[in-house]
Image (tube, rainbow, N blue to C red; front, side, top):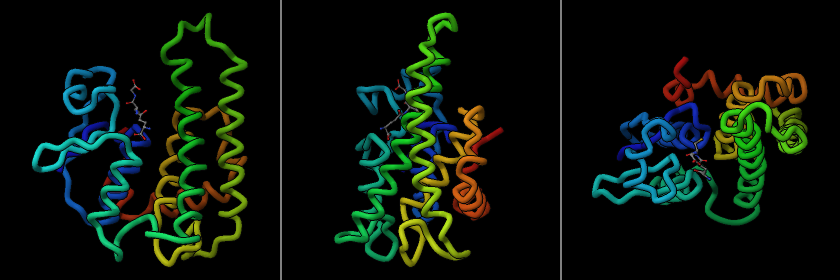
Length: 208
Ligand SMILES: N[C@@H](CCC(=O)N[C@@H](CS)C(=O)NCC(=O)O)C(=O)O
């Protein structure tokens, strides 16, 4: 299978890390979507990444949908969101908080990337940034209670909540450094550093 998109995208990266954690081999096709939209559109009418092209040519789009498929093929031992029950709901809730905070960091970052400086709407940026900080503050209270080998949602092994939290934190540090997120969410910072030191994260490191 071929994963289209660059690892600087948190959506692409959480998919790549998940594939590594599950031990599913894939080829990374590092297409920068804004520079080469023509490479993405044939696989996704929205021209967004990630897209995952399966060996038979079928293309899956949107990281959450792709991850849902990967959980299905990985089986019970390797899936990253538990199949049912309270544990599933808890993993999905924490994942959604982390992903929502990432979305909001993207919105703030795009405001600067795509608008001429003189029409950047600061109140809107502040609104999004506040949601980024709120999301990671919520996650920080959970990370504060974690022992050295424990995971965010209390699962026996790493879950999607851990991957999206760590990948999201690393991404926000890059695109919104002014937020001082490491100081505001020091426990998530520590947790993300622990995750980033693991093989599946290092194998999907953001190129400098
Ligand atoms: N909800 C989507 C978000 C994907 C997304 O926004 N990707 C960005 C790259 S970080 C993109 O393709 N942006 C191009 C655009 O929206 O025009 C997912 O989880 O995959």
